[in-house]
Length: 555
Ligand code: BES
Ligand code: ZN
Image (spheres, rainbow, N blue to C red):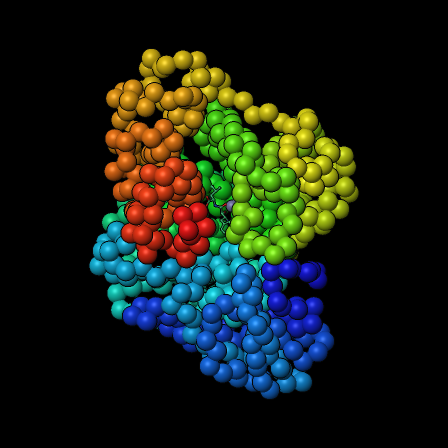
């Protein structure tokens, strides 16, 4: 399928990369990857191969007539134009990355749990693969790959890929944003017959017990939407500076350690990243404007998994929390960002990442399910995943398929192209939450994380000293609850919690937690001063993606 992707310089309708052979040394002292990328090509017209790059140093290009960089764009990076020999079906690019590559985070030993070894990991989504591999960095192009990665003694490299005779290998074609690598002091623990978890040795026990339901989750999705097609499903727990909750790298989900709550209460993130094995990795958005096809479908599937494994009540609570957060965020977005199909012209796709594609997208699917009944909707989704398997599709492709297979269940055009939530939307409800809202609680001993979050969000205005005295939220070992409490403290100007806020901002790099706290701090003179002082200290420990977000807030 030929697509226009405004976030890539490449012209895959002329020459298309179909396979990559990667050969890289990981050099911690210099903070660079260095080696070569061999690109195997399908040629349709012309002698020019255009690749995406950002801050790459190209030494030479083998089997080509010549190469040159075009001018670098602030968002897109620089096109690398390679003049091909008339019949060439491969080129080999010898290159190194920059120490400031946007898709890499190099951690010094103090930033790890073990404090003894350095750590490296990649984050390619949305358009950061180009900062560590020269390629056609658009989700509309899928490629297979093989990789040899050399790391210093004592460290282990892992990739979102299988292994074949000593090489990393991915035989199913994937978009570039799903290529992933990490290296560090990693232990491994089996979780089930086809799943396991990698983490630093200090974290591996906690990770293995938190993720014990992984095989049950895989089975739950298979039951609904057909077989898991990626062979193994492993997880990698990263150090706390990982800027996201999770990343659905194929066969190897990357996850933040902040979901290790000790009681499985935050594992909807695992359900989410696993669900991407169908919605996102099997059927991928062809452009970043179609991101809701990845995330909206995935949140819907995630909630179905939660319902299957943890019951209807937990699912309802999570759906209500999501619905409320969507309203809270939408209130601050301009109309053009309240639609599902986003116009990202001139913007970095990282900036288009709000709850709208996630929660409005999931709500659309929930509304369709309600309209046609669960049985019909399940059959529809299952056939959708089969029909588009291993392809990248646009919103228009989805609409065409929907019109054919499930005509007129809901005003879907309004959902996709108009701002806000259309009339007739499903309304998730939770009886447990109704009780939480009914006054100061008498007995909270059996409350779940979800009830605590809802309780905190319902306090208006909050009696901070009383909440602190009775519930000691500053001591919470649950990162979601702690974050909610710290945010409330900033809003309320509740000074006893300030030291805790500083510790939190200096030890966690998850952007979803950082962004609201810094934003809130910046609203007062005193807060601004504190934000600047803390950020000066914390910034070097944040991932480039988080740095760029917080730079935009703190300045
Ligand atoms: N694919 C996303 C993460 C992502 C999105 C990275 C856009 C870069 C650009 C991942 O599946 C995701 O959605 N993660 C969420 C957690 C999820 C439970 C909602 C996150 O990181 O917060
Ligand atoms: Zn996701």
